[in-house]
Image (cartoon, helix red, strand yellow):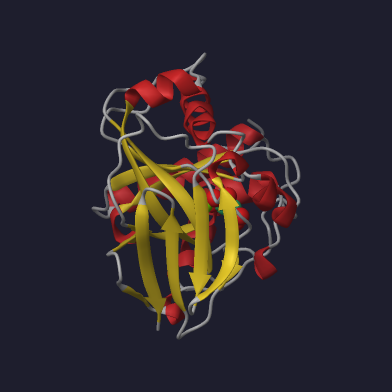
Length: 262
Ligand code: OOG
Ligand code: MG
């Protein structure tokens, strides 16, 4: 680590206040080019500590930048990991107030819920599938706190990977008998398909994103507990939304989920 605790705490406050006051900031590596990966995850952890101290609860985890579409869109090449807290959750069919966010985009995601703990290193898709209780469709709403959604990997990790809201729905579907690579994914904006893909877009198999998360946590002596909900990462590039937009995600065999921006 290259940053001291005071700098980490200051950057966490800076990024969290950008979220809570809905304004953009310059990517933090501009002022702190010496920042390393551990510093970035330490800032992310400090933002979570602030939220937990205010009574919020962790309700899930996420992997991001796991598909070629997303990596190309954001100009980066490594997956990133973050957390999801209680107030990020929006009911299926529910409304999201656009003016509570900065410049939101939506992503189609395959969501896993575990029934056994997963611990790296050495976690692989077989272990993930054996530990999966069910999968379901999820719309993730991301809202980078950085100006024009432009960042580098360390800056986006510190910003908890742009996380802001998620909507779960559809059918809780066991993975036995499903080929998650060939599941068709269609996201519609106002009735028009705007993003189309298949599960294999996510690291060749969406379970590989969950294994990567387990291996990332394992390197830190942590694990994915049983009963954890995990977003495996946008299958396609993210789509910008405006007030009035209605988003529906349909995933083959898993059903559909929707939300509306007001
Ligand atoms: C980073 C978050 C990426 C995903 O599913 O790829 C993410 C970003 O693109 O702002 O959640
Ligand atoms: Mg995502």
